Image (cartoon, rainbow, N blue to C red; front, side, top):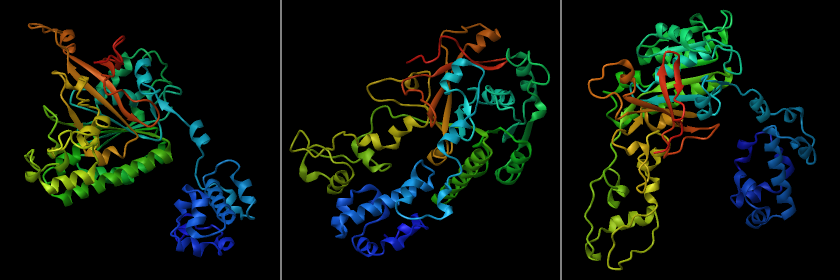
Length: 461
């Protein structure tokens, strides 16, 4: 019980001084009190069952009171007279308060809003990733204007555009304002304005860290900013760190920087109730033509070993490693020690990245959209460490539209049809994601921004 005061510093341990020494002797922790049955704890510590049950209920009621749960104070009063500090919940907001404060930025397109579960919510970090020409910047520019609209479509708040590669494309923003059917007819006082978009350029990683750490928090507090767009997050890391990330120490340094950046952005989004949308670049990923041999799956990057069917020529170290990692049924041939394919490949990064990158190689028995000849596999930049900092990842994919815009066609209309673009929700904490076998919602880029192609959303491979 030495960890009880670390978990609950103000817990009245004086009421249970006759129990704590026996609990410590029995190696009973606070987690054990909350997860194990009182009868099992009483047997381990050799204590009366009723006393152990009273202690566990008291610890549980104290935690519930700190979390602001209903009826927790009444339960605590059954055990002791608590000071006034216990009657105040420690959490800043309860679940009901957060639900009532829910607000999101619409795309002004019903099909895209359905795919995004009613839009981009505030208080979270959302990433938009995709290859060059997929429509990331066009999608973000539209949100810069829509966020200025009053609810339920927008937030009635100004926006910030932080660019790491190019300045804010004001001609394109003006074109969206004049072309979009929902924005162009608005009166001047209600129409979004370019003057309410704060543009910041960060040409290198040092200026990016300084602006995000010191200048952006002041800007949020002074102007009540509702949306922050960073386009793109990986550009400065790739430009300045690619030559130094050859050692493990350099990679560890970048991981710590990404953890610090993710924590800082989440704090800004939560404290100022603003939406943070970040665009990210991708890298090519080459899927193996056939499943790797069992030796390669177990040993990672080590070269595969040839295993003989004779027990005498088998590698004893490989057998021990296989047995330690994953138990498997005995081989069908009793004279062969060849490792069999089991559920172990499900734990490899090659399989798990199907669920968080946005480009899936799919199960062997199926051929998803990303394995088709006109679709290349991609992986978002900055790796798994950055992925864990996100609440939502949106992948914008494109594939060549075979058969459209034939040879000798020079018209702009035919050129636009050469590519099909799809929006896929890879993962999100507030709604359903797009299935692995689903292309997503097809959209197109036009003068008014981005819009869904009617009748094409949700088409499966």
